[in-house]
Image (cartoon, rainbow, N blue to C red):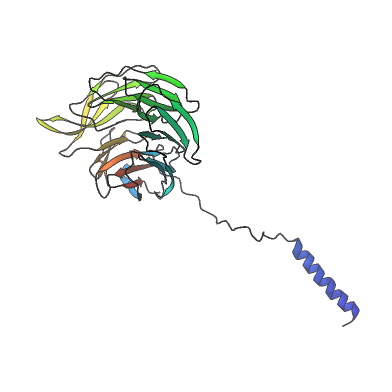
Length: 347
């Protein structure tokens, strides 16, 4: 081979190397990120499709005091005496556990799934970020607190006094007192109160008596009295109906009852009665669908036309808690055996 040919060969190789070096190359250590397909939008539960609810996921959780859906329905927070757990609502796998330094006498989870309020001495309330575990706010009460509850929008906390028939509303950003509410009357030695799901009312409760307070005006509703203790109660999201699980006399027999009260007129009608007690009752958002739990059976009824009810079952012991997602896309329930389940309308 001549020197000229050698030079041409070398020039060609250099050109190839230069061209290849100009091409974009992936960084050698850059991880390959898989492409995830977007989830189809959740189907909202309505009077037209509620009979199509199907069991979507189950999991286990240790005896929760409450189940709180996040507003975006992506997570559920459950609280116990010693911890709070954050669960993915698609799988019901526990994603995060927040353990309390000392057992909490009272606690509540915020509706955005990010904040926890707890007290171990019933006077001082600490707010924690569930993701960073940092304390974000401290509230001191002048009275002994019986209950903590977050408003549906998460902007306020309600506390009840163990010394008087008194509710205090606190700002969750500043910790300042926003309002105190009174007016509930009962001869019973104990009572409690919580926010209604409409965000506009406080529901007072003592044994067999319930009463509503309009938060803005402070006006008290009529009294809703029962023959026996009320074991569960819920206010529809438009504030029109109050549903209660109690017991009363029907044709000379004292039996468990589900009662529906018109909050404006006070008129009541019996929705259901049975030989077995009812354990929980809750409304579906933006509808008058009411879910009633009895042992391991959930019955869902449309109060507007009483079409054929839907029935759901949860294996194991009696259902302890029920809650619809705020966007009306699912129903969650827990039972006394520590099982949690979510039902959805299939896509």
